[in-house]
Length: 235
Image 1 (tube, helix red, strand yellow):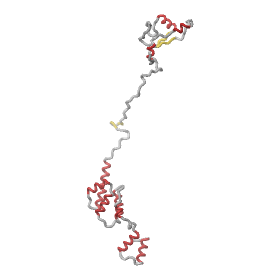
Image 2 (cartoon, rainbow, N blue to C red):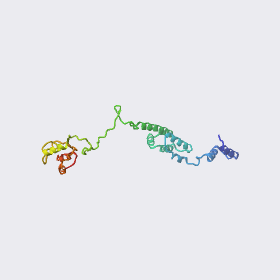
Image 3 (tube, one colour):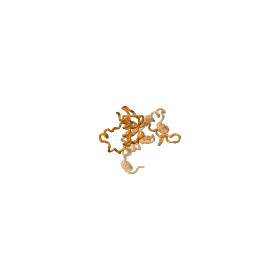
Image 4 (cartoon, rainbow, N blue to C red):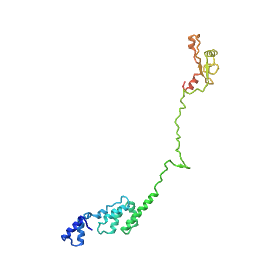
């Protein structure tokens, strides 16, 4: 049923006897109102490409196909196959459908098959908290690299483990007189080495009667090399 501009156009042609036959009416009507009348619909079919699903591609193909004049069905099949995605093109050509309708149905079936296959081979998502071992989350391996120690550096603040001997000033003078070693109570001679280590603390009490020069000559005669080795000093 015509209405609006189409109805006005029909009445004008009818009153002026410009409609000779039905074929003449259809031809002139298309020239006036059909937007595809000046479009090469066959060329548009060749440009229809599948972007998402086969069904969407099929709808676009059929929308243009309505305006295509009589064309061999084999050529229409070729145009439809060329617009499908590559993996569907290959399989549908192997199946060799005999009609355009068969091509439409086969393309949808192949798409469903590929979708099911892609879902079945999707990699499994690893667990969030790492691999599970006997129902527990496996702990990450501990680092085996140890930091270098400072064993070779002496600690001056460490408490001494050697015995400490406290000598009074009188004892010190007595040992000097006897020629004894301050550390081991043995006779001290040049080159003497003690069999043990002692820390010597001298009493602060000084004999004021001792002459200054004698006080200046008092020296510590212990095995200094042994003490040096204790604090890491090379002789």
